[in-house]
Length: 122
Image (cartoon, rainbow, N blue to C red):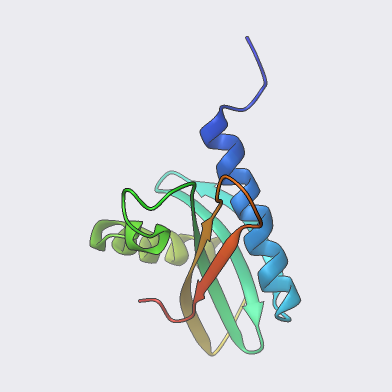
């Protein structure tokens, strides 16, 4: 059995590294990455000042299926809220504010990745 990631998994991992770099460069402290529970996975959990930020990362090579941030559907938002509640219950982090951000990473065939960070996306 091969341990080499699939091209899709490798693209997603690259997008998450780009997103984490963007968030930390913006002064956020990453608390967790790829946190899993029975409801699913949170890509990035970070602290931004007094806020706990639950960040969904979407990475795309093209825009044929729309911009990456458009992939966060109503069902996905509902699941992310459920995951955030589970994460908070499992950790001893308290913050007066909670926020849901989306980072879209577009990886073109040539040139650097283009990144869009939507704060308070939903």
